[in-house]
Image 1 (cartoon, rainbow, N blue to C red):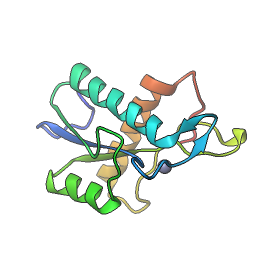
Image 2 (image 1 turned 120 degrees about the vertical axis):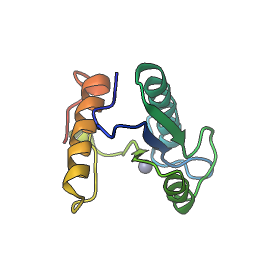
Image 3 (image 1 turned 135 degrees about the horizontal axis):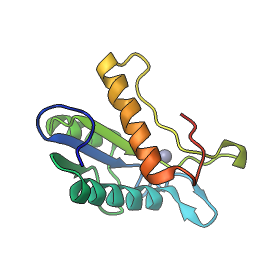
Length: 135
Ligand SMILES: [Zn+2]
């Protein structure tokens, strides 16, 4: 498969598993957010590398280590990443469950198109039928 972005060259996807090391993120139900983020990121990396063509992937961390927010964004920018995918598992009441993605409100039209397509692909491939789509 090919990521539906249409750059005409390999797409550089920078995957950022949230938290890590001394920062566990949300904790609940015997789970730590940092662990869920890392395992999801590794699965996403493997899927992108095995099922998609013309994709290059890097991660902000591949183990349980702390990486500052500045170091994460610097690594992505110095690599000239096309997409920065930061993965988090938010904690909330059961009424707020579901899959959601975010981008800058005032992002250019092309970024909005890519965001909408990536949201659709990720939700349909990983979450449809398992959790609500919160948009
Ligand atoms: Zn988080």
